[in-house]
Amino acid sequence: MVRAAPKFTTLGCRLNAYETEAMKDLAAAHGVGDAVVVNTCAVTQEAVRKARQEIRRLRRDNPGARVIVTGCAAQIDPDGFAAMEEVDHVIGNAEKMRPETWRRMAPDLIGATEPVQVDDIMSVTETAGHLIDGFGTRSRAYVQIQNGCDHRCTFCIIPYGRGNSRSVPAGVVVEQIARLCARGYNEVVLTGVDLTSWGLDLPGGPRLGDLVMRILRLVPDLPRLRISSIDSIEADDNLMRAIAEEDRLMPHLHLSLQAGDDMILKRMKRRHLRADAIGFCQEARRLRPDMTFGADIIAGFPTETEAMFENSLRLVEECGLTWLHVFPYSPRPGTPAARMPQVDGRAVKDRAARLRAAGAAAAERHLAAQVGKMHDVLMESPVLGRTAQFAEVTFAAPQPEGRIVRARIAGRDGGRLVAA
Image 1 (cartoon, one colour):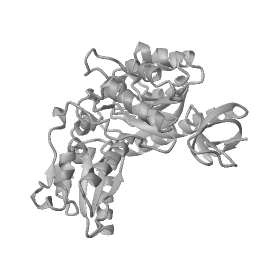
Image 2 (cartoon, one colour; image 1 turned 180 degrees about the vertical axis):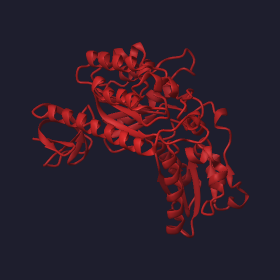
Image 3 (cartoon, one colour; image 1 turned 30 degrees about the vertical axis):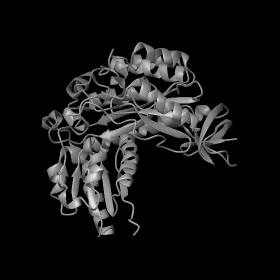
């Protein structure tokens, strides 16, 4: 009898998607079938609501399958998810990456398996970034180098879902990237929860810049290396050197800024001030004039006045941001910010809309400035690719998928560039 393969649904971040690929391999290796696995997100209260909604939908659509729930929301509130009548098993973020967990999920052992397998995430001291090779498209692979976070921003619940920061050793990362390069991947993206904390828990305390320089030195055939997101205040000297000297490091950084007002930043328990963010962007762009920046910004953080919000709004221009991820603030139970005086929901919604409009205008200016320029475009499909700065480019004629194609930009079509 052929057993059906489990179905996986991923909510939330790229790291979750990466870990889903590892779980697929683990589940297949141990014969787990007739199951639906939901890898949840907890970054906002809305994300948790969507996770519960998705679980109910999947139960309706798969009446005979076991429903297994994991991810950050499950780690933070295992009893709440276990109490849902649709849920059969709840697995923690550490447990989901362990072979023995999936061995216990095999049909012949399921009767002896505890319905909730969630331990203290803060006790985890290593991460499993080496488990899979090549997650992503045929052109771009994602490599997990770090997990967890040692910081405790007052709005953020993620450390309670991911645990403390822990790093994948540099040698393991380099070996994995070398294998990916040999298999034909033309771009590798370094991913994690708090990338700039990479290495602090390893012998000698290396920094992210040290890892970047090591990768570029030891994998000379890798055409493009990209960093997914950084905390700018923790950028080290070697990272800045790589920005200045290494053309294979892509000129696009996504920054965890969150706000542009000093008082709000202090109440968020961030480690930088407004001037630090502006200064970093100016210096990075001085070192690499074609650098573009994305950023996370929260609208309507507790106690935020209109004047404080205006400081965040001006950050789009003063930092020269191009790609904005805007988050309307939502209180996460258990975080200090949830106990602070809240901003009226209508004001939060309005401020988020204004930030998104500023972000759309910034992206439009960037795209308009590319018309007539030449770009190296990594093809993600036969007719769609991305520039080094991560702008999408469409092609009228099919191109080899996974290749880097030199193209002149002839115009724009909505939020995309159009190749000549």
